[in-house]
Length: 462
Image (cartoon, rainbow, N blue to C red; front, side, top):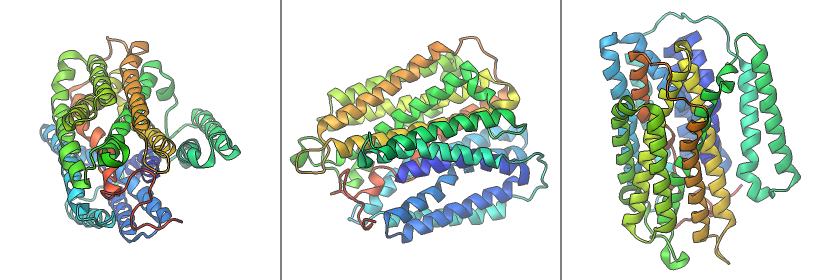
């Protein structure tokens, strides 16, 4: 739930905060988001229970709104000739931060310390960002009109929580238990009611046509399965390499520092490089072709992990391939949306796509936790090798779907995006991947001796 709660908060808060920034001004909303993130980081740094830690991660989840609000600030403050470069730098900082964060996390906990150091570091960085934003971003008059669909926001949040709650807790409650079934059904009904409500109001949180138009719907579904495959690899690989071979018969017994630098960092670098090259590839071959080709690369990466994971270089190669796929896919998705919707709908469409990615990531994290906690070696809480194989087969299936879905709704001939839209697509390519990895990942919350199924060090059970 440390990841699921964070992603749920991101999915529900991002469209609301984006709308609020349009109505109330970008500076106050951005500063408010930073204050909430700082509060979440401080609560996490001082937490002594899992419940408090999850609450802290919920508060940190609103940080996902910083990127779209930041892009809007750049558009307001910079002349057109400087906007493209500024957006590229802004997006590139996420790639750099993601790589740096992976290594720094390993360093912080390499001596056996628990997760609290990570939250203290997050607090310091957020506080510095808050001060800089207060000084550097000028005040502007409010220009937006309309209102915020608070009922729609509450309905979306409730539906997502009710659907994902049984996924996260089904292994504990029992998959056929009444509470699991009732929660899942209730969530589906709430989301159906939310959709019907959004169709009836004049100023909805999400325009229904952006959920029902076949090419756009297919793009959202592709985003969902890409989000799934990303978290299967990110969490699964970090847990796998830290498993002691002497106990489980697989794994490498890597420390958190080794997992971060030896195994995850090369893949992170490959993802950043793929994001940088994505613009040229999309311009040359088209976003549809790039997404399909990327999915093939992703399937190959997962297949490598399924059949060859006994040597370090095999695991690194698998992570490299999957990260390349994820970066190229995330770069293709906004471009596909831009080509399928009207120019004045691109922002809303990309917000929905971001929610789809978050839902897919939440589903994957819950599914992986269930697999690794439910399929264990007799007499231990260590997952069996087959549990990881099943997880990576799921990842391969999700990657394959990402490439197959475009054949069922996305045409080769679409609207040609404007130069401004293309600039935003390329700038957001890096952000799509690193926005979700910037928080606590698999290696970030475990010590070198801890495995899936064990409680976090320093956090007593509730």
